[in-house]
Length: 292
Image (cartoon, rainbow, N blue to C red; front, top):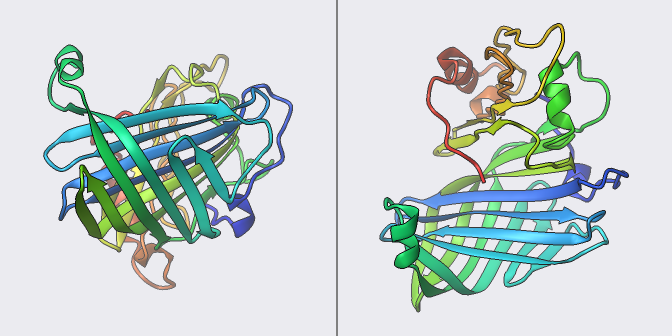
């Protein structure tokens, strides 16, 4: 899978599709404090909106959630402010800072939606964390070329974005909950960016996961079930190993998994590609978690 350069961490030219979107996504987990986050900001200039979702995994097992939407018709890239959430680029394709200070609605996990909503309560949080990449950004620039694409992949590009990158990294900083500060010292996670038309109702199915094992092993997969008709649909190409350690499509019917599996060993000349062996060899038998 290609390694992308720093220009792809900046805004891309906006095309005429009304659903054009430029999105930023981060996730993190710190095992020492049993806390983490997943968050996304999406800019939809042709629709005139910019929205954020911030979900915080709180020590003790509760999930805190925050959502905000504002008007936005101009593209922004190095600093993104939506409500109480701020993403700040410190160095392209290397470092980002995420901050937030506000109340979130916290609810217990492991219960029915009705039970969880009945127990929801406000929690004051202050987040100040930094992401530092430990792998290159791998993905696709969304331009013509790069070899033949399946009909499923072509269909998905009109609904979930043309270009995409993913990157693993370390997190440091603090998460303060109701005045109690939790310091992240051993947190890991992933970030990604997507640009192009984004229609959430386009794919019939969407599943995504990312896994980080220390600094050396990072992999993920995003199977989508896209609408596809005619000859060639439903074929199952064999797994392919990519120079960076990723795997190509290897599923049946119209599912189009895209794995962006990277490890430091897989991009070092002469080193064994442990990530490729894990990702391709397992044929992704694990059930992936849903991504919002």
